[in-house]
Each structure stands twice: as structure tokens, then as C-alpha cells.
Image (cartoon, rainbow, N blue to C red):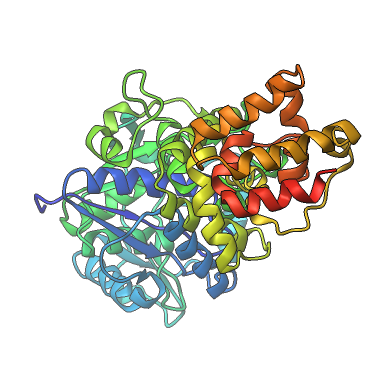
Amino acid sequence: MSDQIVTRFAPSPTGYLHIGGARTALFNWLYARGRGGKFLLRIEDTDRERSTPEATAAILQGLDWLGLDFDGDVVSQFEGAARHAEVAHQMLETGRAYKCFSTQEEIAAFREQPENKGKMFPSPWRDADPSSYPDAPYVIRLKAPREGETVIADAVQGDVTIRNDQLDDMICLRSDGTPTYMLAVVVDDHDMGVTHVIRGDDHLVNAARQIQVYDAMGWDVPTFAHIPLIHGPDGKKLSKRHGAVGLEQYQAMGYPASGMRNYLARLGWSHGDDEFFTDEQAKEWFDLSGIGKSPARLDFKKLENICGQHIAITEDAQLLSEIEGYLAAAEKPALDAAQKDALLRTLPFIKGSVKILPQLLEKSHFSLTHRPIEVEEKAAKALDDVSRGILSELTFALQRANWSREELEAAVGQVAEAHGLGLGKVAGPMRAALAGRAATPSVFDMMLVLGREETLARLDDQAA
């Protein structure tokens, strides 16, 4: 087996990209990228009735948003059908597989017998003389060992032992010549050079069957790592009743990709007590030994806290790009050029006080809106005759100030002191004039973002 680490993500394009699948992709990406290896993408599209181009596009879009780049081209499992069939026939030729002519009716009749409950169907064709083969449709079954045990040396679960008499001779090639999923996965992983199969623990039993195919072909068995599933806050399997389960929903709700990567990495894996970390730290630290055996619980509060920390350290240009992606995903109006410029001026003042992207836009409302400012009812209560008179004095005082925080604070402080008021009493009407709202960022932050001309114009609009 190659010395280079090769991992893969192999989703089925039959629906949205589940958040659990996204975490699986992230674990594979981190493991490969942290070791200079390759991360590959295979679309397991053999279910032709349920696989759709739209689902494939959603998977690619989700990985792109999450920032998980893959190496090489996307591999289609369906397009490898001829290669999968070739391997089935190779096993047939070496005696590691056999032709089974048993009909569905015969198999059903066996299972209906009370004494056969829970038993594997024993094909009468396993050791049949080829000269006795009828001219009839057949499947190719793996000639699995009937004695002994198959051991899955799992990097997360430890050694998992399954008795071979609990595993039937699985079908590798159907009677119509199409390969089964269980065969296709092994052939694809081998041909793609996959060294580590990191996937959900719902595939753990599959690994025993797949190891038997590796053994039948004389191929190296990759390292298996079966990770526990994600549960909801109530400890039950994650489902729509818990809220968002599709990755695209998280982008549409305004969670930044960097925060999602951090939180998903921490969901079921740990590095000491570290909760917040960068991509580079995650690549350096991530190891299969840090993955727990118990299901992880989704916690939206922790997700928001992590996302807030990432928003605070993200460069403004990248943050703007994230916001544009969020607006598109949420099907909200895009920002125009002037609003983008205004947002870039605003972000340094507010990005340390929010947790998700919609909150950034909410706090940036004052800079994204245009005159005349519409004043909300609650804010309008701060604009009585006395307050409007104070705004007139403020306008005059600010006209002579250099536009620095120190001078702005001094000018506003002098006007407030002249009226025997605290700064908070003056800030109310200023918020109403500058933003039309009662809850806003600091009035000085707003003035610095808006600039002299726009600030004075807004104050003057509401002055007496």
C-alpha cells in the first residue's frame, strides 16, 4: 500500500448533504491534509432511480461552501460498473465466488420456514459442479468463509470480531450484470488507492463483508475508522425534528464556514480542552485516536459561540464574501456596490460582538440604509423637542471637530455637560437620528463609519 495517505468522501446523491455527512467529509479532509495526503471525492450514484444531478450539485456546492477542496476529478461509481463486474468474474475464475441460480421465490420460501428464522440462505450452488449449471439467469455470490472469524481492526472502535457463520455469501453481481454496492465500494477504494476509510459507524457491519472481498482479491485492507453518528440535543438520532439537518440550511441561517468547520471537527473529536481553533491547528492536531466512541450531541449554543469567535478574527473582505454567500443561500436581496463599501467600513467596529452573519447585517443597518432615515416607533420616543434642540447644538459643535474618536467624544460630551446630562441621555436621540433605531452600535462608531458629511446630514434631518 502507498506510503501516502489517501482518504475519500463517498456520498450518495439521493438528497441533501446531511450535516453528519459533512462532518465525515471534514474528518477525511483533515486527516489527509494534515499529513500531506490526498482527499478524494466519489459520488456513489449506482441507485439510478433516486440519484439526481441536483443532489450531486448540492453536494459539490456544500463542500465548496465548507471549504473542503478535493484532489483530482469527481469519481462516479456508476461509470465504473464494467470494472466492478470484471472483478466479480475474476473472483469467479479463482474459485472465490460462484454462480447462484436460486430464484427469488426459492429464497423467499426458505425464509418463510419457521425453523429458518434468522438463518442465512445456504445456496445449493456454492459447491455445485459447473456441468450441472442450467441455462438460466444467475447472480455471482462471494464464496465467504464459513468457519472462523472476520476481525475489523478499527481505529476508532477497536477490534470488532464477527463470526463468519453470521455472514452470508453476499451477491456481488446481479442477474442483469450490474454490480452491488458492497462490491463496488471495495473495487473503487482499491483502485483509487484509498488507505483510510473514515465513515459513519452505521457501515461497521459492512466492513466485515468488504474485508472478505479484499481477502478474496489478495488486496491490502485499508485502515477502517467508523465514527459515531450525530445525535440531537435530546440524545436521539438527528432528524428534522431537531431543526436543520442539511448543510445548505446552515449556510442559509448565516453560520460562517470557518465556524462550522471548527464546530463539526469538535463534534465527536477532541484535542485536550481546546474548543476554538484555526484550520491550520485542526490539520496539525487531528488524529483518529481523538475520536470518541459515543455519539456526539448537536448543541446550537456552542455552535453559535464558536461561530462568533471566528467572525471576530475573519478578515473583512472574506467576511463580506461569506455574507454574500449567505444572502444568496437565504434567497435574500444582494448588496449593491455602495452597500458593500459601507459594509467593509462597518465590519471592523461590529464583528467582535455578533455570533452569526444575520446579526452583522442587523448591526450594519445604519450604514446600509439611505437618507431619509426611517425612524422606528421606539426610537422616535427619544426625539422630543428638547432632544431635537440638542441635536441642533450637536450639529454645530461637530462641524468644527476633527473626525477622530477623541474629538467626537469631546464634542458630544461638552454638549451633554452644558445641559447637565449624561452621555446616555444624548446617545438616545443620536441613535434615532443616525440609525432610526433604539438599539445600535456605539454612536461614535457610527459617526466614524458614516463620515462627517453623512453624519451631519442625518443629525440635521432630525434637529429642531
